[in-house]
Image 1 (cartoon, rainbow, N blue to C red):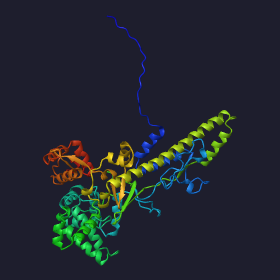
Image 2: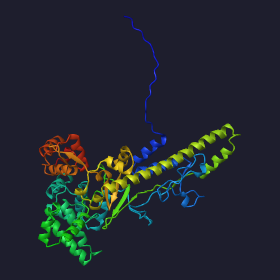
Image 3: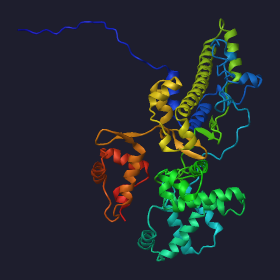
Image 4: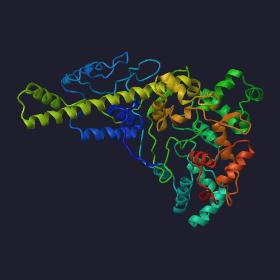
Length: 498
């Protein structure tokens, strides 16, 4: 049978989703945390001469606002051909707080210091009269802090490490004494060996503050808090308020108030100065600033960083008008100038609109997260965290799930002085061997507990940890173990070997 080759032409309808250039630009901007976004704005200002910073000179302050009090864009219906009416971008697009629009001046927060955490701590050494060996011990202790700002090894282990690694032969008493020096540094709680010690260090710092002595009433409260943490810690972490009431002869209102006050203490004193694994340089700059008060109010604002007000160059707009008036008699060079000028103006306008949309999207997404996790924002207690997924936030904010995912993937919030990645506001859940859902944060705590109890001369590999977690009823893949370990700031098996 002979075979023949032939070509046929067919037509078929196919639906494809293609993002416009502005949509692609917005997607990229949404993924950027504030530090990267600042750099992108600077780059656009350098690359596009039609994009300028500051308010246009001939417009009044009220005219340059991007959004009015209703949250609407006053320039959204502008005809693109009327180039003189192209909008600008400023700080006052959106209300600064929830639930109402704050009019007070925004405070200047010391955010995003790029200095090293190690340098910051070592700079405090000058306040103490230490000899050279003591300074070396103190520097070693600073370098031994984990990502929470804790010392995760015993004094005996540290003493041995100093001898073997630094050739420093000091007694355990000396290491303990110098550790207490570190624990007197800022932030309060740094150098603690446990959460309990971290809380006690902060309470004692307040009780013994000679520069700002507390009132008699506050002192009594702090002394009660110290009794709870120092001698009744198990009752505290298990929230056994009834037994505490009886032991301390307190009312339910008093115990509740003490619990709430203790919860405001920082259990991650090194977290706000988050460092990279290599040089511990601080990299986390909050994109959102959230503050709560005792009356249950929550205020939120976006961190504007160093992003200036943006507008289209008036010189370029005037030049465009000149070209438009002479459109019928233009030479070739003038037509090329018209095309170039229009391209730059349109690129500037597109970037300004993308920046405005980024700001709206970030604000509405964070507003939705706060509404859905309101109790957790007020208490910071993991037990108060509701099970929340991206779909919940997307529905509340009115955006697509992929948009919310981009907002939450690489950004963090400063909540009452402590930095939280946005992912922390979602309740992480896993399933145990029986198929029951368990809190993912408790899974992490269990993993840390196993690693803390290992023999440092023969630490567990990730494969060992998979089996040990399975024995505890939690089935995890090796890559998940590695991910959780890194999130907890725990090094690999080779780097844990003592």
